[in-house]
Amino acid sequence: MAPSEFKIISNYLLVPTQLPAIISLQEFIALFPRSLQSSPHIRSLYRDLQGQRNALVDSVAADIEAEAKKGKALRRAVINIRREAESQEHDDEVEIERMLYGAASNSQNAKHTVSSIIPELEGATSELEGELQRLEEEQATLMASAQQTVGSMSDLRYGRLANSQLRDQVLDGLANLQETCTGKN
Image: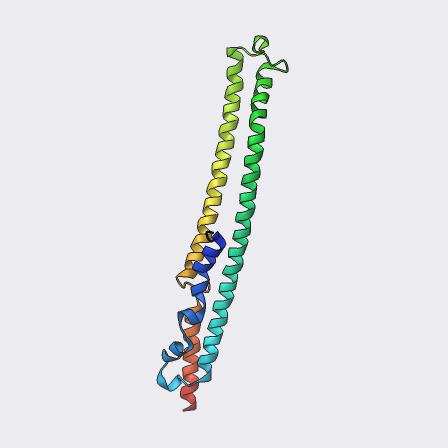
């Protein structure tokens, strides 16, 4: 059986995003000067970063689950609409005949002439064009929403964090740590 959309997106976005998968504690410690590598603040900084990363991953997981539920609901709605359309397809033809020819649906007693049916058809055409325009606008809105969701998921995949100031915060924390350690020496 083919993997579900939920499984594919989860594997793509969530599995490789845990902090230890990106950088281990030992690799993180190695990024600091040797004099600071034994500091317990580095471990707490790593745990804090790991906690922030886990919170972001949890948020994305919740968003994926919500989108999966929306997708299932949308599929159900489409199936229901198709079933309804199939059941009404025959009824629509009967309704058109009733509108054109009245209740006595035979062509010899037609109420419309060529000149009287043209305005009716033009009105129906304009109604259909309005409905088509509304559907196109709805489709554009849904497409923009889907593209925004995919874009935000892509940011997570490539390591762009939602907190754009995180880099500066980490650097400030490291500078404070370095000052603290230098002051003790």
